[in-house]
Image 1: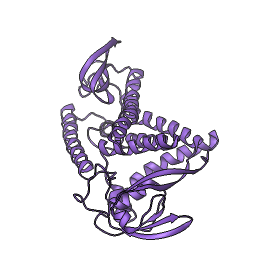
Image 2 (image 1 turned 90 degrees about the vertical axis):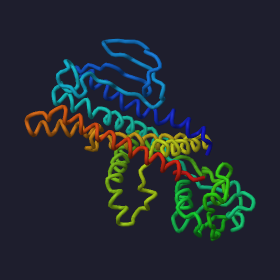
Image 3 (image 1 turned 180 degrees about the vertical axis):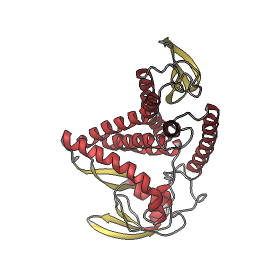
Image 4 (image 1 turned 60 degrees about the horizontal axis):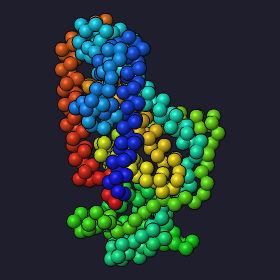
Length: 357
């Protein structure tokens, strides 16, 4: 997959999802009478002030990652018309609106995707590199994946994950060739034994090939399936730690993913959409990420929306506010922790990329 697919997908897929989240906060704040000092496209530093209206600066910033909302008095209840000084109901509405906007976006994207319908396709090997482990094992161009290490190949991610997790070890392949199944064993090369710029550890190129028409649904069934799928994504996320402990999923399937890994996955979805002329993969991916972003931001972690919501709920139970200085310190520590964790995950996604091909 080209680096340009990764960069392009980041800008065209992930950035709008983040922007929708911030727009949810923005409109909720305005509806609640909370003053917004700045709404920015991209992250600071500021490139240019587009215009100013209603006391809000609308800016264009240099880092093309979604956008941001800067409400007045975010941590200072003494600021008139600010977020911290607003009623508990207004704060809860404003803080949760970002996730709400992501859920609405996901519902619409899933709805459109299901009306288009998931494609029926198989994972084909169009090219085998000379003298590669795959060629030496007997893999041929035109072979179709049936299973990898006993795991049915339902998509390219199965091939990528199973081979990426078994470098230096035999990988059992079942391929379909001229209508007959062929069993082969391939040993993916270790890092340093091949040029990752030109080929992967096994020396094959894979692509999805449609085998039939999309199985589309009607509007009502698509909407029902969209709601169910959103629930499945959230429930699957909650169950991931338990499933990992029980061995129902592998560590690679449960690993956290940074913006680098997400960009890789978005690039693959965009490439599949472009090569197949089918919008389902890209719409599906964008919807899943929108749900994940909304749900993650609602977790009761300091510095996230959920962490701030937790303080509002504690205030409602106690009957009085926790001192702004203490709350601000908790959010600061939480932000530093999240930034450190994010940096570690980014390094992991660079050293051990999601897509090793």
